Length: 619
Image 1 (cartoon, rainbow, N blue to C red):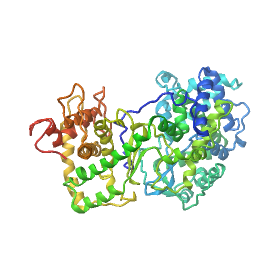
Image 2: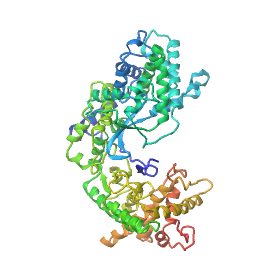
Image 3: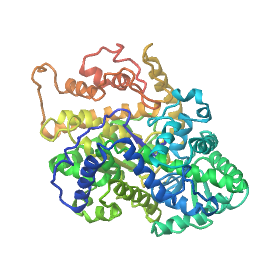
Image 4: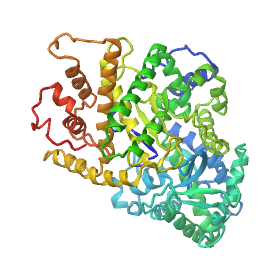
């Protein structure tokens, strides 16, 4: 896992609010009205169209982007095909071609953004779904992607195009496209390194030889100018070359295409057409809620926040977060025997400087002009397909314009969806985000069921806080900048102690449901810390307020027993196989931390040495 981001996606389900936000006419600013209008247009114009009508719209959109170029065009002239201009136009419309040009925080310096040249995800998907074996007619039935085999798709589009070009000609052209897809995808060997940096100038000299890469600086700056982005790259500007093997293979492939003259140029143009078609075929217009969320995430998040999260809930959640922070200090950091005193002091200092982003960025609630400016490029056109084009252009612009921005650590909300029930620790800026959807049942109650809030949301927050001090968090200081604050003694102690926890989780596996203690180590540490911080914070809350509770039918359970019972329900699932590569199955995300917690054993009178209260605690 990328240690820059850690979240509870493996544990928390997403709360769906359906279409209620968009089927209401209750909007408070022009951006919200725009979101509702796009949703309504999606419902009324997109749904009910037959496939041929949709195909004709896609062909028309792609024709506009490629100046009429298509494997089905009987009048195409490759000598006048504007390759560079087409690449720019496609990227402006959020269509990935030879690379996914993604702008994000510089993992080596979080106060700036840089370009990352990534392998296009759809390229890898297409190669996996079709590949060179798709050229064999006998295997077509087994080579279906969500919208059909490539032959099925292209034959369907050919009928919609009503062209004089025969299928045999189109098929031969498309075979070259599928082969190019496969050759490019084979260049990715899994060498994924977010810290790899090269300069634009590096692409202009050996080992790179293709016109495309040696001219990439000029092409990229032309894209920025065409997109009205106030940034200019130079030969010394660094970018993230995440996959060097893919870049080298891309250079080799482009060199071969360029050396083939018009034939190679025609294949590349056909391949660009195929990328655009694939983009529009796979766009999620069948779910209008998700479409609007993807187009205007902060607007939808604000609508959700104002509709479902009252101010009382926000204030209580902020107080809870403060209590959990104190719980992390006293129950996790100051109790960590493997940390020496110097490391503990540095950890507490870092905790005191951790920013807490709870709910939704309030400046967007107070000042809707910020969202008006962010989504200004999105326009509701008479035609839904034209509206979608403005959405694509907006996504591309929002991505590229981040190059001109300096990241302010006290305003770290990215323009992403905050309606998912999730929390995250951003180690490289030292802040924790608790998204708005978590501030409601079943994780959080603002009306008196405080025990549930501490046991469930408190655990989630404690889990994320703990990540700031683990093997990933140790390399980032209190301001989020790279800085190793563990001493050598602490590093040695941790290295020895971690094997106890690895073995512990390996050994609590069952024949039908196993845990890989090594792969899940960091998440298991965070789970143990999360429950300890939440339990201590709840006890401090009871002492401070006199809070007591008895639940009907469970009168024999005191507050301690109720806390652990409710906390365990955070990980309820119907499936016993609910883990992933970094998270243990949910059963063991309860059993493991509870077995390691003496307070649980005391609450339920588990005798020392019993299965749920072992004599030696692993962590």
